Image (cartoon, rainbow, N blue to C red; front, side, top):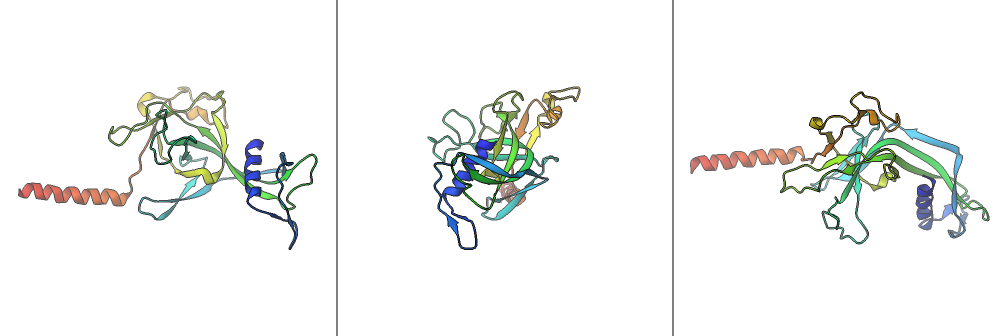
Length: 234
């Protein structure tokens, strides 16, 4: 986690100078700084996180994530460096998006530091992050033409990539992940391995639902009605 926060702090410092007083700034030379210090060793936890996104009709909307409710799933971009950003699928056939369940919402106040250099910024920098549990794709990526939903599942808790920390700014928007009820639950007795991971409520598979806004459904219904009238008259 500290490695992730350090990379983000260095990235932030590379594009800004830090104020030490009313008019004083510290020149940023990032090479000597190889660690971060958490102010007062305190990590703050939050109940919700809000993410702004652009709708299909180019309007601003907002998703609210809460780890303690069903509104806890998100999607982020999953694009290899060599991939065209306009491609829907990765070269290996995987999805352009990765999905995760939010387990915790946190922030810390940090300084960049080094064993040989003074603290780079006199004022702590707020760093926000989410603790997430990643989904794996359990089926090939489907398109609209296939008329099938993508299937997900959770990897074993012991897997190295089962959990992670992400920047809230990397979230595309919330996602609607629905259990495949016919497949059943992983733990039939309701007893899981980790209370924090909440794996006691895991289902064997999940569907990624595709969202269609209500105005598009209304338009589709109107066009269907018009088409049916025209076919009746002919």
